[in-house]
Length: 116
Image 1 (cartoon, helix red, strand yellow):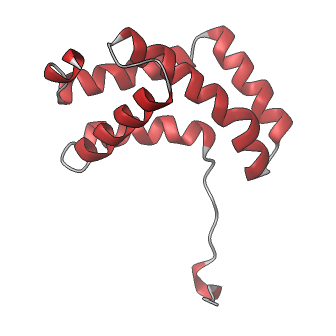
Image 2 (cartoon, one colour):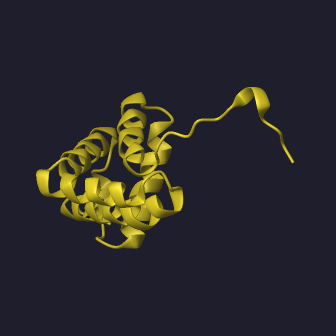
Image 3 (cartoon, rainbow, N blue to C red):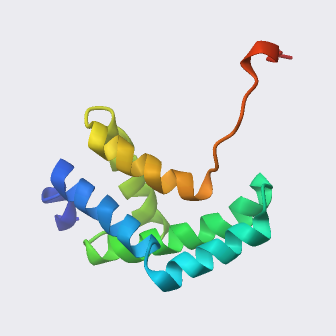
């Protein structure tokens, strides 16, 4: 838990940038491109193929920064980032960049929205 003592907005930004750099490394980028190609535009397939790759890369990065390299560590990191992004637009922007990897934009027709 000593990693939390030094965790602040600047370290959060650094970790998020490290995640983006890791995702963009040639071997990782290739794996993600292949996973996206196999998923096509199907959201369920994106969650089955792309999401786990991104989560694994995030785990590797946060572990280097002292967080536990497991699901609990990733959940803890994500919760901290969500709290910080409310007050820091740069953290929100970086998190949004990462989410865009596995959550493609969804077109919503607002003129014909019907709530059932």
